[in-house]
Amino acid sequence: MKEAMAKVFLVIWCIILQLELLKTTYVKMDNQIHNLIDCSRKNLTTMPDVLRNSTTDLNLQGNLLYVVPAWSFKKSRILKSIDLSYNRLKVIERGAFEGLVKLSILNLRSNLLTSKLLNVNIFQGLISLHELVLQNNQFYDNYTFFQTVISRVKSLVMLKMDLSRPYKIDKCLCNLSNLQDLEILGLPGQSYSNDFFQNLKCLKIETLMLDSVLSLAQNTFISFPNLKTLGIAIHTARARYDVISSIFNSLKIFKGRNMTEISITGNPHRNGFVLGHPHFAVLEKICLQKLNLVDDSILGVKFNPFLRYGLKENCLKELNLSNNLLFDSKDRYVFAFCAFKHLKIIRIPREVVKDNRVKDLPKMMYLTRFAFQKH
Image (cartoon, rainbow, N blue to C red; front, top):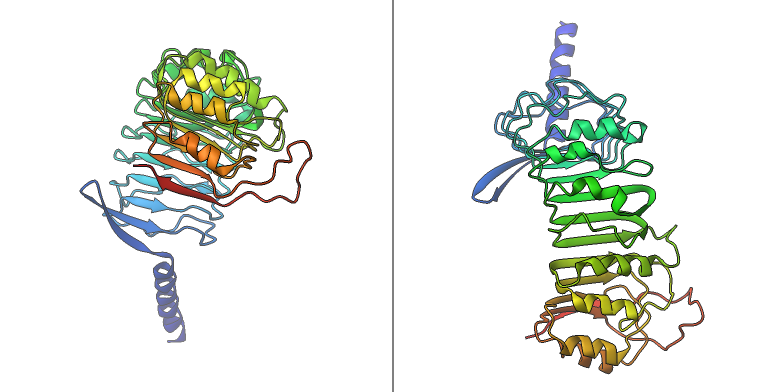
């Protein structure tokens, strides 16, 4: 009798644990109901048995998972999104994603995955997969094989991956004829040139994000004739002193082009980069709609060159200068912004500070940012 009661108690206890893990949310997006199960940050060490036939989105981010077993998601064949980021995954068994023909987003960022333990057909059958996130893993043991595995997912539109020298983009990625959005994390910091990207001429990449940048060669973007959006995140700890110069030299390739957005973030050096600096003249020759210069140690605004840019024919609609140090008269640079006839959104530091560009200012804090609409 006691043994039977113990078994009943164990079953009840397991049900309680499952209910504790299971947090289901129903969200309406794009006129469709999304059934989200959130098991993030639960310290799970094995895959939980919580899926339902109606589950469309599964969040397992931030657990302690080591392996994704075969047929892990067989209870819900309509899954559209799986987030396995920030776990300790080393093994994804063959058939782990079997039957997930509707899966469109798979996030495997920040795990311990290696090319050695990656099955060449691991993504086979994911015929609807549009977004694949693989950054911050350990595929550097064989980048060539790693890219071969990715090249089999022909439905991909967005790819986020690691890649560092001496490796470069392999021509096998030409199989990804739908790929438009590419984000690369170079570990632990990367200097880029066209040699790195030349095999991408076969694709029509419209969005490119480069993370952990040390410097850029002048020919870096030659292989991107269709590029509309460019993001450059500087590696703040290891960035070269001339990183800003190298970036603006590489942007000269976009002269006369229409572009949606350029972002340059994280320059740690207070090396004279100011609005109105000769580098800034490069942007005047691009029909650019949105410019983000955030955390770039911008030291000031030279009124006349910036005003000249505004008075010229330009396409700028949004300007973000958040988290910078501006040394000048606030009335002067706000007046200069008024010269941009298409500018609708501006984000600038709330105040200006006393000009002290020569000396380093370790105690100075970045200024509060604010945004306002120009009508």
